[in-house]
Image 1 (cartoon, rainbow, N blue to C red):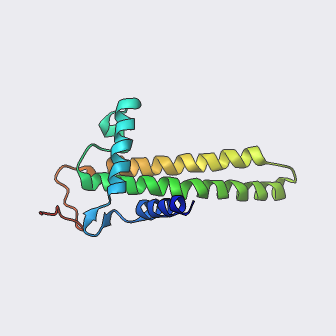
Image 2: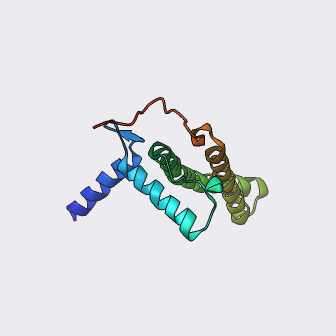
Image 3: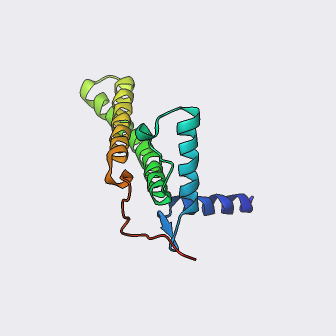
Length: 141
């Protein structure tokens, strides 16, 4: 039982760690990016220029995985909290249950946030060929 909890906490720490850990790219982030790219290209058949994940370089993949983690670990709970707050606010203003309206507003906020992050990721300068990352250089062993 404690081994499962320890493994879960170690994995959570690795997932929530930065893009670079001990001078190397975070292997969990690279795994998320390669799996995301495989699902995006092979399963969903999304063209590379429209997809959230790219096939290379590894530094860009780690960056994309970090944003994907931010998207799911921060925007999903934030949308739920916003939905609950909107429900309370609409109940106070309209004097009737407004759960459906609050859910629609929260879902719209989540879709807007996802679209914004996707547009930034697809059009960012980091996708340009030959982009130089300031904080990391390829390690020569």
